[in-house]
Image (cartoon, rainbow, N blue to C red; front, side, top):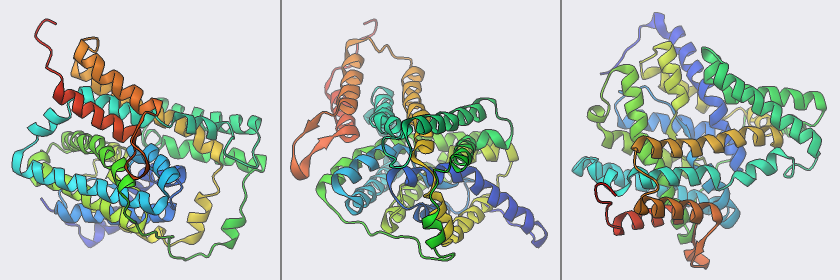
Length: 409
């Protein structure tokens, strides 16, 4: 169903669209700030990705697409090993995986996906995504990555940011509950200003209007092999997102426009993001929360939010200002963020209701966790398998090869 708006309703449409972007903003820019990508590019690619998604799904699903948290740890690891350009090539390949899955879903349905990736595989893989780089969050929170902030100042900033974020997440009401990350960053940044540890040189040097720092992808086998398996967890999570927004609007988006179309839109949005140098896109649960609260079911709100994001990407001083946020402020929020991703994986296992001490499940979950978090590595040079990619492949292979548990075992 398409929605239309009269001229009288456009001010309300613009305001509601801007509010949707505000809800997504903190998480949207958090991913590039943590991974070393450009936040202005992330704003641009979130807008472009959302427009691509709505073009594919014919403006039927009220969702906003922006930076995916599932890729934070893999992007950090990949940039450290292969550089930014090669990492973007790997992310583009992850988008191709989305597109391929969408076409198989179109032909075969979703049953094969659940057989290939049952909760006993997906759950621990999501946990690995959250926990593999937990030490990075701690080193940022304690000031190890900051040149001008000592340990005492860093701990104060990181724990204050963390405290505000969790208070808003647990006790916040209305719009406040939807922006805990932005609230934590705002308070941490305010304290950093009072302490005099924010350097505004880059902001004063930046132009008001400027092109975002677009970066082209390059393609290397090692980076592609590293990143492709990471696409598995968000692709499975995407199904849950579509069910969630459908339960809010009382519509079945798995049938219309169809899961194959929403997955295709997600995949093409991720490829478009990587083409310009932005992080992969995914549907934002924060925005689903805002839709629930405001009953703003019209997809046009999301298109307006996307256009505003693209416009803001060209405000040079905004991008420079975002990069002045101190590392410990982000580190404090990352400790909660990475942990919460791990809890999502744990919840996937719990909801499945299977015995984790049964020999088969014990083997699959144990090896995924230890290989992924412990840093196990197979191969070398261009064909190194490690981290999330190795954990995912080991989980899929074990699930396929090991015989199913018999009833009563």
